[in-house]
Amino acid sequence: MGVALSLAWVGFSLLWVSLVDPHDFVAVFIGFQILVPSFCIVPYLTLITRKPFAAVVFSAFLLGCMKGVAGVVVNLVYGWGNGHHEMPWTTPNLMLSTFWVAAAILCISCYLRGARKFRFQYGRAA
Image (cartoon, rainbow, N blue to C red; front, side):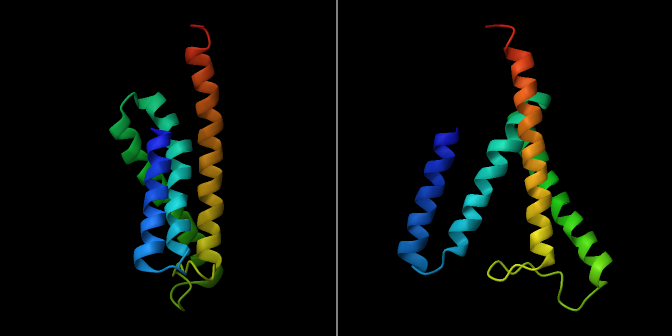
């Protein structure tokens, strides 16, 4: 699965750069950001739920919650409005930076918990 996702990202990146805009690497970076949660969060939730589809849905929900956390932080700092709730990928602001940090913490914690659960579940069988 990891090889297929990586090849899909490479294919998307090559098509984007060759057909859409050869100078727009933001879309390529955003496409890469999809790989990280799929390698960290989805396997852990698959171990817990034992249902891959449910793990993907829960992963998307958790990442949406991380955007909500970023929105709460921006509201606490700047209040409502004033254009601070946008996520400009070319010039990161507090909203985007907070989302990246929250998503990174989620990915790292799910990866570590998933590795520990995998060793506990399948390490005894070897």
